[in-house]
Image 1 (cartoon, rainbow, N blue to C red):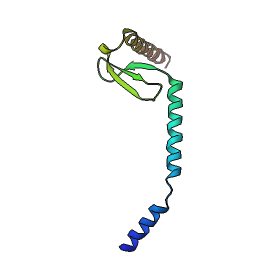
Image 2 (cartoon, one colour):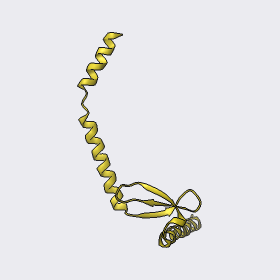
Image 3 (cartoon, helix red, strand yellow):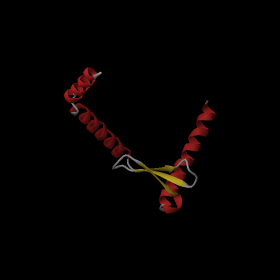
Image 4 (cartoon, rainbow, N blue to C red):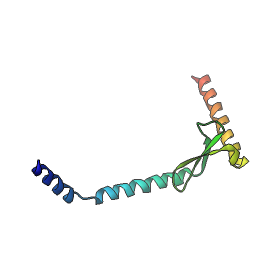
Length: 95
């Protein structure tokens, strides 16, 4: 068993962490670029009376009570919901 432990320690010491760090940095950079392209998005959350906001700087989604948001954000989310419902009805009629 000690031979196995020595081999494992040697393998860990020889393993390079740099490629993993580079891959993480590249993935993070791609994710931030995609987030910047998306911009600020507002939609209704899965929770009733909550909005989900997409942060273009970090790429994260934040959920807030609609009562804490500006009325213009609530209107935009409602507009997106109406537009989506209209598209769904149109597709059902075509199909």
